[in-house]
Length: 234
Figure 1 (spheres, rainbow, N blue to C red):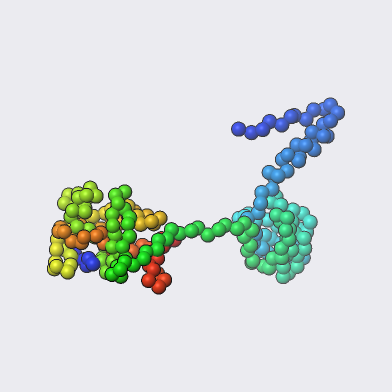
Figure 2 (spheres, rainbow, N blue to C red):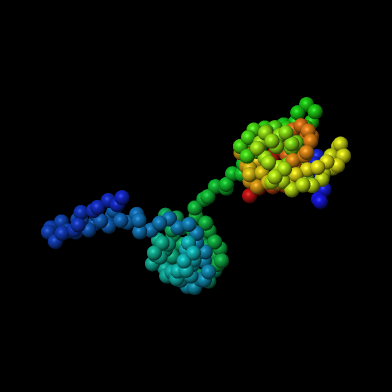
């Protein structure tokens, strides 16, 4: 028995053979032109010769000769054994062999973060929820898992006696009986973790739900003075 520590499309007019056909064809060309070449996202030069270059454009290998655009709209202006001057997306750039350029900027994905301020006694407490029910957490890096007393478990609808795995844990009051359970979700602020292991202690301790290492080990923690910041991992 394990022991743990708790702390639809637009139709275009059809061209006819009557006068004006050329006008219709010109109009059709102008309407379709924007869809023929999409913005290029990435280019890598993999081979260089005199006024020729082998490039990979958005994952497709192309052999370019000077002045002839690729289907993607990339045109080789000039090339030698060291570099190639390419025109694309309305710009010109010089590429060295093997150099890859990503032409579309994608901002980094923001990771949810929570800042916790200490209480008067130096403890870090924060409101959150377990399985959608509000709880008060005490952040405890010394606790093996998220932990709660039996009364809190009952309030949250956790049938620990049926679903839990019995075990023992060391507490300030000695060794106590615990039940290992899995929580569907644990949330603090914008951080939500699923399938979090927790312990239900068969007693009245602890008063607050301990936010232990089965949650804390899945986030990044850092201190800024007295402020504790928790950020969801990538």
